[in-house]
Image (cartoon, rainbow, N blue to C red; front, side):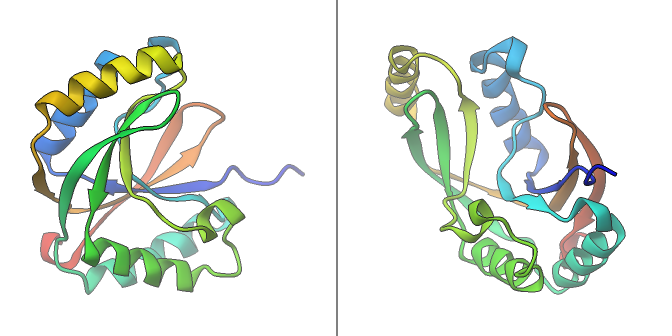
Length: 172
């Protein structure tokens, strides 16, 4: 029997931030490869065979969280794409608590240092990525947004299927 598809945990952005970043992603991400909306990944691979347990654990941790404020701090060149760098002490602490809850299930990718970001372009030539990085950097102004919760997705080999929306305590 094949192993169930993994679960992905991403940050839910407020409506204005999501509209901005998803618009940029739709504009600059190669259309044939853009199967998912703009997102900031907290975990790439949580246990897919235990969706109910993941939802329960993440909900219990999120319930005690105030809505984190997330700073958009810069534009990052990724080699073959561009991402917006994010910072949030509250979100980093929350991620640490989720990591502790799933420490025995985390992949190497999810155990390594976390550098939160929202990718708006990927899988393009370095030249094309450099050009977009330069253009977005020129007009960049630091900003903030509120995160009402997290989103749990099932990975389907390209597209993702939303499994749950889990609100932070103040958003419940």
